[in-house]
Length: 297
Image (cartoon, rainbow, N blue to C red; front, side):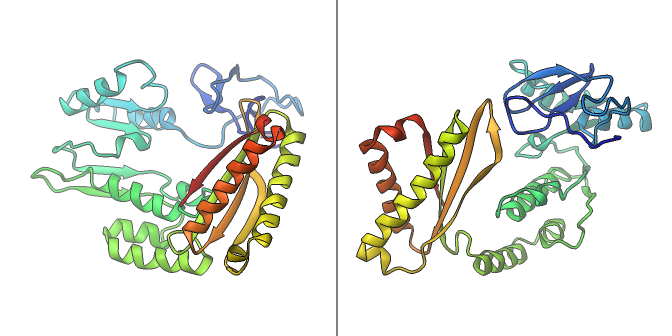
């Protein structure tokens, strides 16, 4: 709290999550350590987390509703084999009054006697570094809202958000699919994202950061040269390169990752570009040290 230092995983470029028992855990590689008594940077004793997880929400619920039986469903409570099904079955048999959980509790479950759903921090997913963040937020909210009132009893949903005017949240609250589609498609067309245009995502990974930088730059150069030499492709002025840039989580389990995005109105051209990358990788041994993955959307 004094200097703002964030405890990060030594193997991944992400912060550690605080759990009960003074544990700090990486949710990417499983690295675990003990929460320090003093800050490793400034030695301040004022150390604390900056967001409430399901454990803290459970503690608040049990304090506010002491007579209610509370179940929690998250990463920690579903590690053991069969625990996922046990928790859902217990809730279905009315062995608990409140079920607290992460996104896993909103998808496809049918509990006829659930009459109230509460969604906390509904705008968190809007801040994800992905052009589909609005779509995913709408999906999650409509799924969550749909868990209430599935039987004969009337259902209600409460959405807590810092972005109440965002179209994803407003249309989800109103269950207005058509209004969301119209707004989202206008956004995709304006900024040139799928399905308005095709997008080829190329991820390059290597344990050696310097070698990764060279490989990513070389890949971009080779592709641009190949496109310029190919008359059919060079005539199409819609091909756009973005990057290479560091992946949202640059390092995972001691492996560094960079991403190159290529946009084009014709997905067939993106498929040709992917084929050319495979040809380059197969023809030169220097590409065998790096991992290359593709996604066309």
